[in-house]
Length: 241
Image (cartoon, rainbow, N blue to C red; front, top):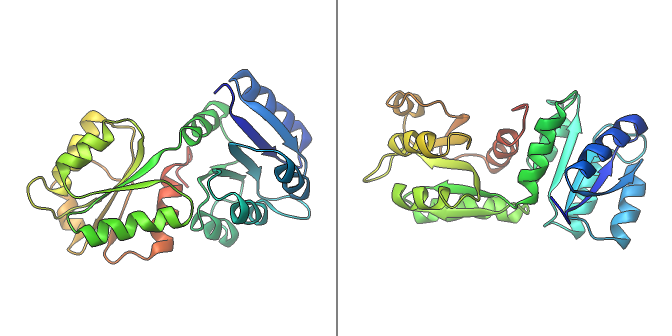
């Protein structure tokens, strides 16, 4: 990722040095910070394309750092690292626009894959034949600094996903023409690496039984906004937290 500038934040020096070396081998330009306070000072004077931060640090933790950065630079993806994947602090951050969480300990190649994806500015694809519902859900992601696109049919969804920028899909299961279950099966043939979140105002379990394809998770409409945003962040994690 030549030219991509990463702000790497971790109070554990040995891990930070190892991560920085691996990122630099991949072509990233890395600036290191040993604390949230130092990272915030660096961000005030330098531009970054990505932020990778540990959560548990003395002083300003990674979630508070994310919130401070997001208030000024909402377009910069922030990836958090933690050994405490399900604690309340992490859950809150995931629903506020963190790109994803990398659980510790982690495989360095998996972590590099997450950073490469974030650097490309991926899109959450919302597929729903109700224009109001599709645009409302897409707007939720845009409001927290995440890119999203709303489409109204299976054919539009297939065209969008084959464009290569989509990395998570939210699919309404009841649509005219191509059903959501049929669309999910098509996704699995054409882009099997893209996680799918299924939604419906009907019996989600019964509708999913019409497809053999697994989905990442499912929700009954209306979906609480924080749960939907958090589910996308979790779907992007190499550990699927």
